[in-house]
Length: 373
Image (tube, rainbow, N blue to C red; front, side, top):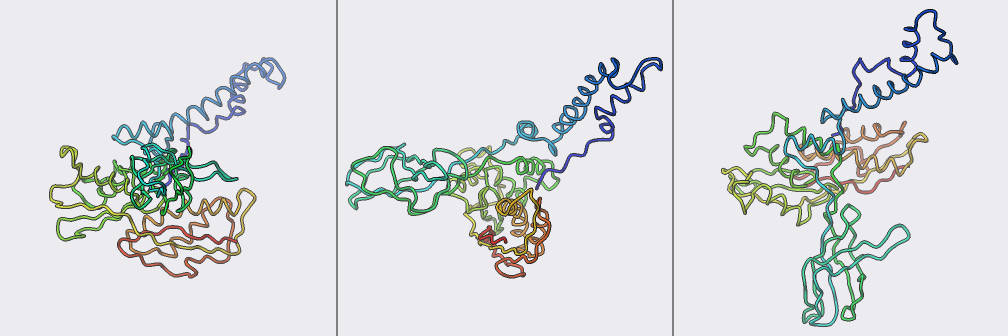
């Protein structure tokens, strides 16, 4: 949910430099020259400009940072600290690389494997998180983690194919599966949502659905589907996606479980005593394709920017859809109308149709192909 727009209070209005200066001129004694170019006029205008900046910039910003609804960046972080919340930093993706080579060769922890550099970007580096030995089969599967955090560290399968420092004992390298879990730094809007939840009356700490969603997001999940009595009475299953709307990685699943259950320190346990078992799993995503024809937009945007804006905005609809078990056409269609620069369009299709898409309990929608023209 986006932070609300700040509306300046009434006492801020009528304080432009021109309005301030006009009042200053009106307050001069009647026998003093107040004509433009005169000494009193030129002498007081700099003061009016300074007062204008103080009121309309510094004072307005001071009012905004006083409230979490309008604060940003480090100021919003301070509001989070007041309710014992910390903004999530960017996370590194993880996965596995298959190394083929001489039997018995050691691949030390911290060895760097990477994708080749391209015309559009540098090589993406991954470091092994364990020491491994190439076995009798001539290969070893080794866990890796990206060197740099962020969504750019999520790479497709069979793209990690080189070593930063070649090893004669290694003859082939690949990642048979895509890496996952690389997420951006938590945005102001998402962090504000978590801060607002701390003030929400629905917060109980008794283990209702809202509590589980909040706890999962505290551990870094982008969203969470709560399945009650998943394996019988007293059991709860959390179906997780990351901040990119992708199925949660193993690292994220472990982080959410440990945050709620706290297996090493029962004093920090959030899981209610009445809950006998908690399980955390990655969501099964359902790819939704979107087609828009007759798209009319102004010069402030472009097709690519509209696609990016739509992908970001539709995530809020996905969050509501997973609670209802259905992605409604009439909930998604208005999203395109709210994108800056979009003026009109002829046709909007969701998976080639104008009908709703039913979701199973463990399914979470994700944005697939975008065909905008």
